[in-house]
Image (cartoon, rainbow, N blue to C red; front, side):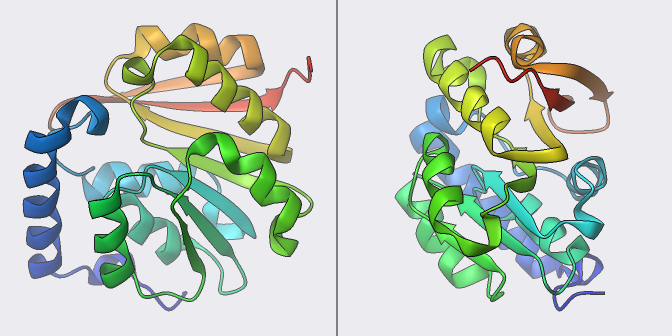
Length: 207
C-alpha cells in the first residue's frame, strides 16, 4: 500500500473539503459543474476503472479539492506519478496545502496541455496509463471538449483508459465514440447528484 491510504481520510478532512467546494460552487458554479465533491465510493470506483493499481503515469483533469486525487494516490504504486491539471486558482491553493504527496505534481494548466506535459515529463514519455477527469464537458462546449478528447487519445499508452465523471451523459457519449473504439458507461444513483462514469479505451488514431 502506498504512503497515502484512502481509508484513512479523516472526517475533518472530508468536512473541510466539502465546505471549501460548496463555497466555491456558489462563486463559480458554471465552471465547477458540481454542488459537492465526488463521494468516496465513486472516487474508489474511478480508480478501479482506470487500473490505477499498476499505473506508472496518470493524469487527472479538474482535481478540485482532491476528493478523487486522494483515492488515486492511495491506489497507485509507490513508483507512480500523478499530474493534476487545475485552472481554478482557489482550488490550486487548497490542493497545495491539502495534498502532500511527492508523487502528485499539481499544474496550473488546462487539460489541453497534456500533450506538452507528456513531451517534457520523463515519467510520462511513453504516454499515460490512465487519464481521469471530472471536468464538466457539457459546460465547456463541443469545440474545447473535442480538443481535449483528441489530446487524451494521443497521450494514452496502448491499453490505457480515459475515465470521466459526468452529470449530463448525452453530451459526452457521442464525442467519446468519435475518438475511442470502446466506450462503457455506468450509472451511480447513490451520489449527490446521481452521476455517470465513462471508461473509454482503444483510441481510433484518426489524427
